Image 1: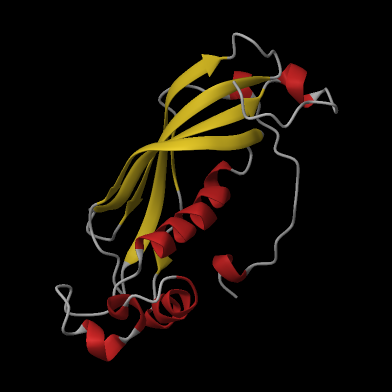
Image 2: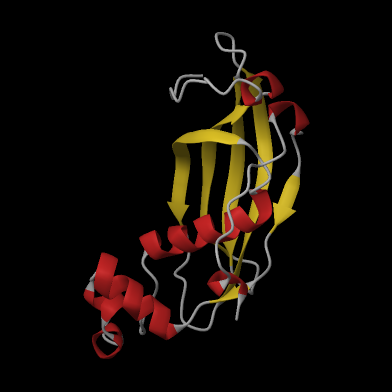
Length: 171
């Protein structure tokens, strides 16, 4: 069994807004992307011909089947949970500067990096703060396939202790 096949075990995260530090960098373990998973994902969620048919994809600008951007982001989400699941997020509220820079191909080994670039305590709600994180999906050659800035609300210690905390997405 590989890490991405491991059973899901829910747990309440332990790190609150006050525990986060600007400049903190994390890196996931590498993950091999296979042609079979690219084809399966594309056929269900993004059936573009160069994602979903290996023979036709050879006629594309890529010369082979490539993962869709949505598939690459789904892989990011999975790998991000492996490195940042200890952060007590309220929710994500947006992405900025999303760039699809390099196609992810069958046989690529990718990993995720995260860097906290900004922390803003809420001026209106003591139960949360805003954390802005720069993410990248990086291939085995050190090339960024995808990058973006993620804006997330994170519970403060006060918010974590209040079971009636609102699910509002306002900061």
